[in-house]
Image (tube, rainbow, N blue to C red):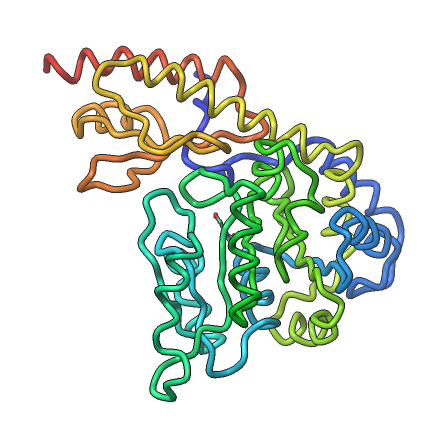
Length: 346
Ligand SMILES: Cc1ncc(COP(=O)(O)O)c(C=O)c1O
């Protein structure tokens, strides 16, 4: 039997063939290490140009590393980070920001994973009180952990609020490609109003490659040292760069994200027609959050891989990736339909 496609995560997927080819090409002969090679030079120059980043582009190995590095550039030692309660830095990084940076996270419950200026303002009441950790950075995620996207206008409003109130803005862009594809905008438009952001390649078809993009010129100087200190300066950096090179070529990153998003849309459309299945967040990137009866979830999980996101609310997360096919979606949706009936009568 052929293996069923996983809808568990865009991390479950393999590597895009173009990325593998680029790795093989980069494997010819020796190259200087720690990012002084020509692949890294080319790719970081291209990223800088695409984002119009004045402070530089720095390659790292994973998304958590990019988040920690980005926050460490922006935070002073007594400062806190305001973020959505659902933010990856709060829920899924083993407390790295708290442990490694010593930064308090001021978490805000949100309906859809998106912060608003009003919610950020509510977190500022302890300012000037030396008993309280001082809010210094706002962290947003684009696309969010709940599969939604900030519009450019929403991002600008947040940025304007932050900058008017002495806060710096960090963006976790592990799925920035999916947001750019949904919004139909450039990477420069997404980076424009933030101070520092990450740009993820891993979930877009790479093996393991992320970039930290520093938008403001004054903020980039410490990054090389902090990256090394935080163990994110890999010696054979050319292979990280080669992965990015493949995804940046002919905007493969955008094609991959556009496809993944379209597969999520298709799945949401098909699943929402099944009685008892409710889509709980707008489907704007490559994630579908759905509420369905517990017995229905159990029946599906016997054969399909996906996360039970919120057991109490009976909400699951289905994710698509660059290599999810229409046939994969249709087969899964057919089973969602079929097991809805079976789980009602058994
Ligand atoms: C929004 C977001 N940020 C950061 C990360 C961290 O990536 P990594 O697992 O590569 O550290 C993830 C991983 O799933 C993520 O979903």
